[in-house]
Amino acid sequence: MEASEKLNRLRWRCTRRAMLEMDILLGGFLEKRYSSLTPEQAAVFVALADMEDLELWPLITGKRECENALQAEVVTMLRDVRVK
Image 1: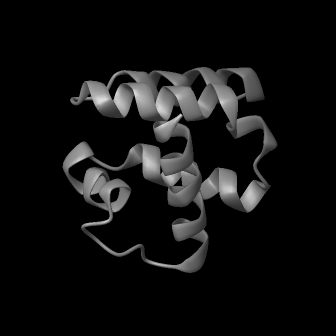
Image 2: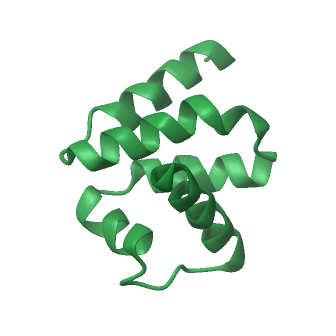
């Protein structure tokens, strides 16, 4: 699968969520910040995008702890996009 196809699939996963808030948050992050991520951060973002909204939302809101420092770093970036 070529890079543009992977990005299109990721875009679809980011903007076809159960929660409108997650559509806006993940879609906005993908458009504004994804291209500047390191490969490791990008992999974490893809893993977060694969999560169900009911699993991901508590991470975004701080009600659940992140699994590791890299995940926490990407979640912090997501929070920054959400606020703006």
